[in-house]
Amino acid sequence: MILASSLGMNRRPIRWKLLIVLLALPFLGLAAFRFTSWHEAGWGGAASILAVVLALLLALVWLLGLSRLSWKQRLVGLAMLGTIGAAVAGSVRVDGHMGDFFPQLGWKWTPPSDALADRLEIVGTQEAVPVEGRAAHDFPRFLGPDGSNWIAGSALPDGWASQTPKELWRRNIGLGWSSFSVVGPYAYTMEQRGERELTVCYEARTGEPVWVHEEAGRFSESMGGDGPRSTPTIHDSKVYALGAKGLLLCLDAASGEVVWKRETLEDGGVPMWAKSCSPLIVDDLVVVTLGNGDASLAAYDRLSGEPRWQGGEDSTGYASPILATLAGVQQIVSFNSRSLTGHRVDTGEVLWSQAVAKAPAHNATPLLVGEDRVMIGIGYGRGSRLYQVSQSADGFAVEELWHSTRLKPKFADMIAYQNHAYGLDEGKLVCISLEDGKRAWRGSRFKHGQVLGVGDKIVVQAESGEIVIVEATPEEERIVHRFEALSGKTWNHPVIAGRLLLVRNDREAIVYAYE
Image 1 (cartoon, rainbow, N blue to C red):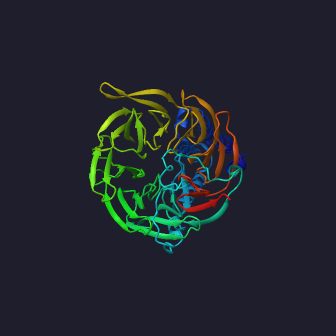
Image 2: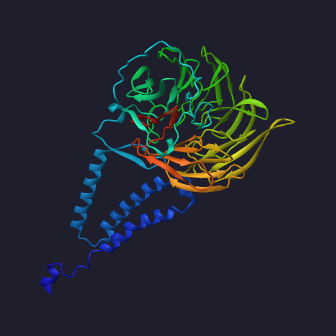
Image 3: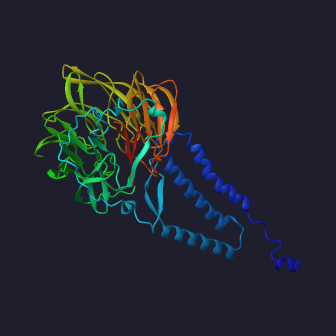
């Protein structure tokens, strides 16, 4: 008996089953979390991180206090955990986050993606021709020719939606969430390469760089990632590009030469996730949102860059302003941090203001959905709202027609087609009625990508980079075709110009042709 005791044969058994139970608890909680309103508010990635952290803490509690291991074994286990933690911390970096806040991880010894971008060896324009956004199939600005996020797609061949297009080219490009604007044979976008913020013109069918304009500076932010967010606007042979820190450029579309430049945030700080709006051309003005100062919008002379007006008192959101005719009056609609406002075109004066639900960010561009009606969508559990704007004795009146939590687009823009709206509801494709906001169907999860309406189809660019073609019908989700395109996080909008499909993310760009 003495010998058995000295050998430890009467030691109580190690609690391995307890360890399994403790490790399971956070993940059981994570499974239950998916049925709560917090998950609907888009916090799934944060909850996953919390579950992993809790599992590690519970494993540590088990090791040091509940395992029944000897103290020598506990210390050895603690040393092993510390070594593994130090190795992970020393070798892994966080390269931004996905749309649900889950981190993207990469090896520290690999260069950042903008360091891997293909060299910009300029080929130059083939001939000195004006670059004008007036061809029927151009895509000269963010969300298309009229900013509605829908195009007719009349240049596409019959049966285009059920075929995989031919890949014309792909190339590694710089960081950023800018999309493409396409006019004639050229495609324009913005990129971050090192400490340089670029506006670049490519030949759309070959991918060859035509010109590049560089500005010193880099916007960096761990959650959203580095680089510019705005998409250039092409108008009357000029390129209007807004940098992440508020530098507004007017460039010659054929050569890239600077016509004028203007710092727009001299009186207001850069927003947390950078300037994301795309310039709006209205008559002889170029209009952009401002920063955290005392005005919402600013207008500049589009030929000279001279300031023309500032309007509104709310700090900026991240959505782009739109031009609308509401209650018979042409106006600029701005989706700000606390309000939706309509502004006079000539002076920026606020015509009407509607308070909106508070959220960490307002990102999706307002959507015109019929006469005198404008729709907004907010993520983080807030949902969508449809407003009617009318004339009143005091000027303008705004009536909320409905509020729906069935479509909560965090930063995915929506489309309207035949009295229904389509968009990504915290990552799932949904269709809701524009009459009452009720959901017609909820389909597949594409996470936080983007959508584009093309005829009676929806082009979905999933956050993973996959392209999915879906019928725009309120009956049910009908997926027509899908194919792998980009790889890695993709928040940039897809573009169709004529028969070309242009896609990009913060690592590469691809152009396909439907032939």
